[in-house]
Image (cartoon, rainbow, N blue to C red):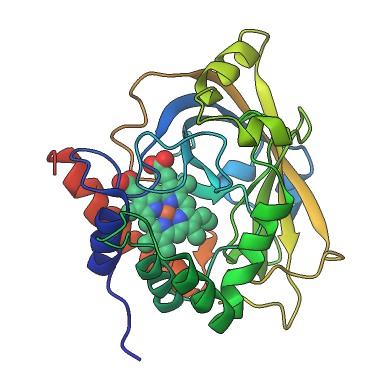
Length: 305
Ligand code: HEM
């Protein structure tokens, strides 16, 4: 089959969600936040990547709802996103652009594009054809793990009460010069809390920014950054597959969100392939596709398209 192109994603998002000039074509609804990242004392024994040194690194962040709907209802069973940009004192930049699911909804760009194409509303009814979506999912088992996770785990009660997962594999050079295959995740110090069944069934609501503001009025909200260390045979190319849960996990840092709102994240393209020296992307084709798609979306939204 032919390879998917980044423009096909921009096009299909417009067909599913409508045209929203000046907005992100994915994760259209969201808001900026700010804080710091500080490595835990042991992290520098693992790697000398700049942001693991222990200095307090300023963070520009954005919390978001998946999808291209700028008015997405906040009780929907869809992923939430967190984009982080770290800038170290010596000028290193590191991005994380994560979801609240440990896996992605497809193994490669072509399957993701195919799944999105089934979600284009039927012009006759204005709604997607559920049978078509189900048939596609049945024929593509790699689209099922994320859907199952979303069905079993309630959407977050607050952006502060959910973990965020990097999903893709990356390589971090350790202090002996060996590249370690890792996946990163941020675990909330406030604990994991989802919406109740009643809250999920209630009419579309908007509460995520207000709940975060109320939480921040009491002080910073924190996450522990963990690196899951892969072993030989753990996939580096397939973001729809979670690694075995007995993998070694290192607590490497503390993300502290201290403020929300403002426009500091508007000029940031949270391209997940912006990596500090000592960090390298894997050959995951979904990860590779993201840079090109985000660049198109970024250019469009900055020029009010
Ligand atoms: C081929 C697969 C994917 C495509 C085509 C895609 C597309 C997009 C696009 C067009 C944007 C808007 C970018 C901008 O205007 O700044 C976006 C935002 C985002 N995506 Fe993806 N995405 C994909 C996969 C993923 C995956 C696997 C993750 C997480 C692991 C993810 C997490 C995010 C987040 C957190 C944002 C919001 C960034 C922000 O707040 O500015 N996406 N995506």
